[in-house]
Length: 163
Image 1 (cartoon, rainbow, N blue to C red):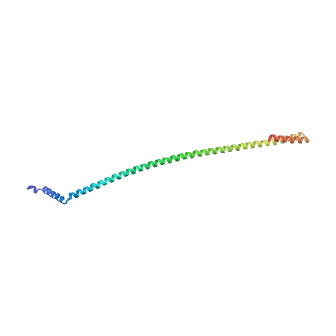
Image 2: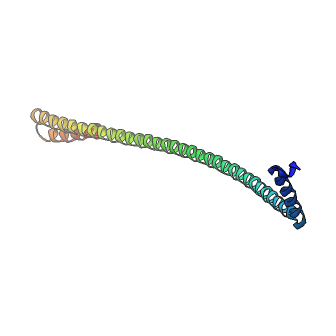
Image 3: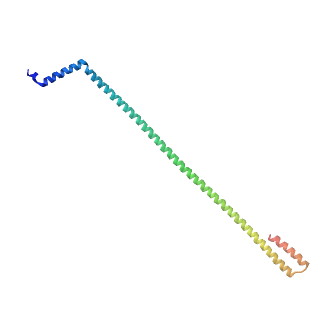
């Protein structure tokens, strides 16, 4: 019975007794239940993680779509602003050209009016000078009533022709 003197034998016997006590008290069921609960908890956590991952992917797609929409809207605003600026610049240029044309026309009409007035003034001065010269010449060369008549008639004719 040398087998009972060995320590390994007694460890094996104690292990078998321990297993029998565990089986009698149902420890194996408790361990299995604990393992099942842990498995279910891990499975629930994995399902929750998958659900959160899917939600995060949806949120990411939504934010990317919003960003793309915002970028398109910003681009549209920039293009609209450029078009408005070009339109305003074209309108300002047209108004400036119209203003310059009106001012030029006004200046030309004032110049033409001044030329006409100057021409009329020159004609009037020439008429006065001609009348004065004719009256002096006639008064020196013709004397009497005939001279006065001729002088008045000539003055009237010169005034009529020059004015």
